Length: 620
Figure 1 (cartoon, one colour):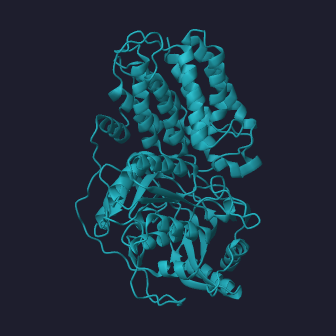
Figure 2 (cartoon, helix red, strand yellow):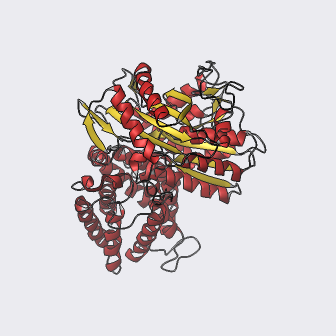
Figure 3 (tube, one colour):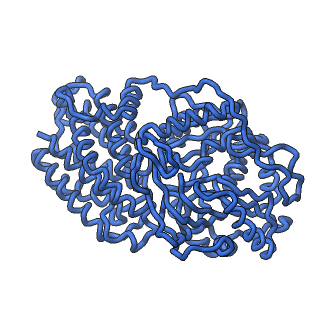
């Protein structure tokens, strides 16, 4: 347990579970825990015949996302670890709990991990016969170029979602509440996103639960304009600004980006001045004073402005300004009543056309109730939950470990020894959680493989089954983009091994051979799957830059003994990972850094090289 600047000690391993239980206790009149998942659901959900709006993202951003669940807003929220997306498994379980039979809208910010995990969950829901749509939120003007010739930018590569999430969630939730079908709710969410823009600034960084050093810092006496909510570097650094100067910067960066005002809209814009976690409300009101003046001077009418914390960045000092251009439909949806732990809008208090607030946000009543705790119902879940909670399951190898488990154990040991280094490399691009996340995921993978791997020890199908299970466990425990990618790597490798019949395999698996050619096939399949999921190519400074030389070397040595060929391929991956220091990032969160990302190896490529090296040391 460590102490943050706020003065509270936190266990990093249990932080997500602890705060979700506390939220459910405090706001039991509104939300309850999702059984078997890290998520919350409205007490009124599921409702037969109603579209379910399911949102989500990492911890550290409250009130987003769990604080925005309740009647008239979101139906449920899946929650990841601090600054990490919830896993596909958690999104899937949360969405299934919210399903009322009319379809599900998944809404999340446009971050690589969220895109992957929500996308994978959507596929599983569709396979289960549940009509599912996904809307990615892209409101942050600092994180990508503006639309070109009136065309929306490519949401798969560019702008991320920040405080404008709130406007999109509110509009979608109100549309679902009034009875719109899934296509209609999806249209509203996409429309609200297209009409929303955000720009932010930070004055000081944050320290994560369990950390002894800040995740990111802002130099004393300076302000980072455009910094992201995970510490992604801003557009530029300036001296400390007065409240009026800061307001001018926020407005000046948003006005040129606003979409055209709709006919009959009368210049109405919903306004959200959002605190990032440490900025006092009185300070934000001083900033809003100038924001209001500037907007009105530009011919805009601030409509029901909100000043407060809606999407935070743990204990970051800073603010962001979000504007949503309103038409009559969006105005009605924004006015619609809702009741959530963090935001409450009463019915009948916002007459049409009013741009003045007549009510204050009401504090939700506190009621104690027994929490519905997450409980595992499978052997894998039990083993993984124990590993995550105690950290003991993967502390050491056992004599009984079969090959897949032993390989994962060795990978865990080596990556855990380099956890701090991987975090430092990842911090160059933003949140610095790669080491923590991969260690957490590998711990769960070892536990899952140990619980699942059957004999005989030489059967590739036995190892394949264990790796399939381990991949799901890793993605679930790790979260984030890396968790999704590593989960797919293990699962795809396991799938190739599990279906092989090389060497005259009999029905019971006897005679199967784990040879170099088989693993070359698995590496090829893993590379294809990772490329499809993440959208990256070799040369864009990702883990593919280590995986590609590994698979090519393994393929050229297909006739050699496996242990020798693997070690040579792992050495090629290690060299390639080091060489990523000379690449300019072109994919993922680091891409927006451009040349600033040069000179540092990619954390994902380095961790993959470590894993491949460790696995090679276990081969005989």
